[in-house]
Image (cartoon, rainbow, N blue to C red):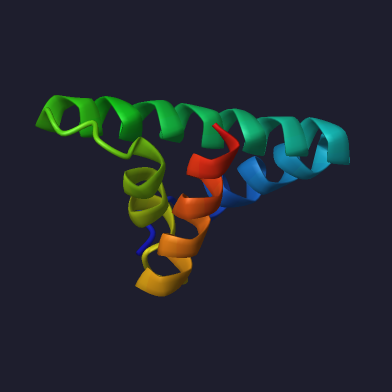
Length: 81
């Protein structure tokens, strides 16, 4: 779905592509960091903060990782902490 006027979309694309690759990467990393903060706040709001790593994996990657893979990653993360 898009609700953006094509002219506006073209201007935005031109502005983004005028940035260097490093600047675009930094923007992407900043957006991911903010989305992670929002998800963490959402998890905390449920009151169930047990196994935050697992909950984050599920929220971000449930469409691409099966539960066995999430279990393995969670186990590795708990061994490292």
